[in-house]
Amino acid sequence: MLKNNYSGFKLEAGTDEAGRGCLSGPVVAAAVILPADFEHEFLNDSKQLSETKRKILRPIIEKEALAFAVSFIHNEEVDELNVLQASITGMHRSIDQLSIAPEFVIVDGNKFKPYKDIPHKTIVKGDAKYMSIAAASVLAKTYRDDFMEKIHQEFPDYNWKKNKGYPTKEHRNAIQNSGATKYHRKTFKLLPTQLKLDF
Image 1: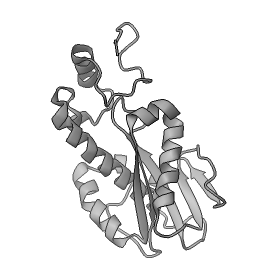
Image 2: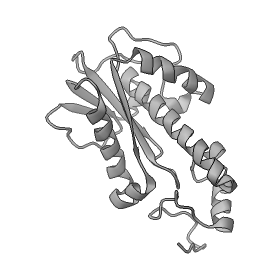
Image 3: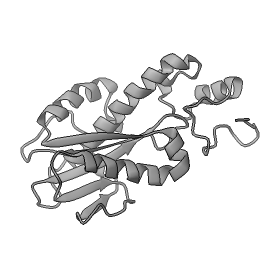
């Protein structure tokens, strides 16, 4: 059962990201402040939910949230920053864009940098424990999936509409056969070591 609040502050934002382990596309982060009485039977860590349930939840979260924001760190910036810093930067940018400043921030995972002077707590598997982090995970994942489906039209060989940029066998075969695209992360090991890729 997901908990509604960690800190006791009314304006507690949950934040999470999607796409860290992908070979292509952006890291997408979201931050959400939910009302104290928010509940929905589907809400859970986005990885535990079907695509259908995530799509049902997204407009509900956006309508009911006191504030929400989503930010994209595109692959060039992921390469520049490294993926952990990209995730933290994305979360900070999402918190920046909230229409209400949070009094406390709860973060999925165990790595974060303080945001301004707002207290925070990192929570491992927080997206399966707290509603606002779960809501942020749903937004981050659905916005990212939409983006990957859009760029799939441009480069259909990689089947991003299905694998969303994750390192599936099919995705790696496409990189081997067709090379890397402008959406691939140049600092990631796109192919197993024995196969070399020219940029």
